[in-house]
Image (cartoon, rainbow, N blue to C red):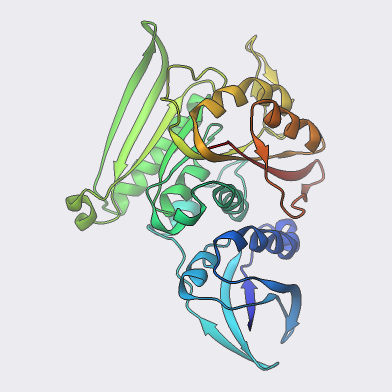
Length: 341
């Protein structure tokens, strides 16, 4: 067994950065099922005055490729004695330039490292975990906002399906993505069409097909991002069953975010939304797929969120403690559950 030291990336969010070490320990534990080696002696260790996440393992090249995608991974070293560090080359999934993720700035945007953490934990809990490095997966976010999760899915080389009720957010995402693709001179096509259900217009559908290079485009190695301007609790007939491998959703926090009630008003109770939406979401999730949720525990207890998932046939996947402070009014937690199959 060799000893390793993982240097964590800095974060623009100071509060999140202070908790990154603990969250990375939990994330490393989630990677264990896809690694060829056991991971042991995980600890936070100061080396040269800098804190690293240290552990012992016998990492093979594919193991390093998996760990390259840890949300806070900045550099990985093999320890040679107590004082020397030998750098290992990280090969994160990064089909596009990082500004696809970092350029969008807006009120309520979820921390980018956290978005990646939530996606990783959900992928690793699903039947698709060992295919994480191989592409050809479909990621859903049915409270997509302005597309942070969808863009992270594109970075990984996956297809993405989003649902967002706020038309302004859908327009903002469409404008950003098209502008970004044009600026990068990437081959793409875009379609915007109404979606009808029982003869009536029920949603607007944006579909953008893109490729990372001209060669990829010629070879048909394209990706697709779809965004529906629709109510996430009324998706029947708008998307085909079993259409996503994993579903990642950042629920309304009950502070800056809110959800729509059946009567058309605004609700700041995420559990109300969850009760109405999960039956729809489960229908769209493939067998063996997983749902990853984050929410504010100050407005909704974890046990109640898990009860809703269990009542809809999902099995919660245990993980290490992930609850963390976002600000004075938000204590964020994660729950991941898997669909049988």
